[in-house]
Image 1 (tube, rainbow, N blue to C red):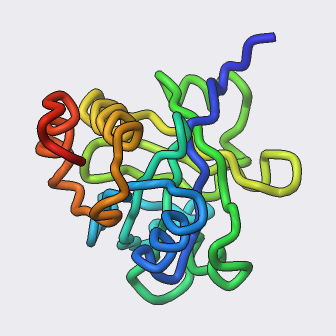
Image 2 (image 1 turned 180 degrees about the vertical axis):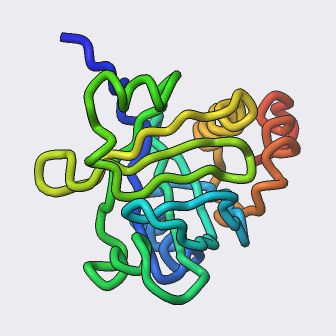
Length: 189
């Protein structure tokens, strides 16, 4: 059977502190390095259909081919991410897939009424969360990513495969340099 939703590529956790959560993942499982976007203000974010400001600190690491996303809300108030923290910070919140045409998929499966959160990132990435869509009450995030974002994901995965355990937390701006080190074995990642 083929799923229009694609393959799960990400496990998402809403956390109080990206650095602390990344350190715990690295210590317990060896996942890393984690690339961090310090302040990511979404161009558009709608929670239950109402425009809601959202500023996040994001951390991305890889466990094999699965991305571990750590999301730390930075702005106060209510909203999807704050509700998730109150409901259980650090627990698995969502699984994500990458889709080619987000709007077409939502239309095809009549899923607009299941969207709890939708947004547009500064990078051009579009996403929606389908509320409690997966068995067990997890959200399903559908991502329509830009070629640049998909390249960054592949780069982080390649770096993780050869990671030597050093420097477990890195700024997102280090990906190109780290990827160059992966392709040149005399440099270490």
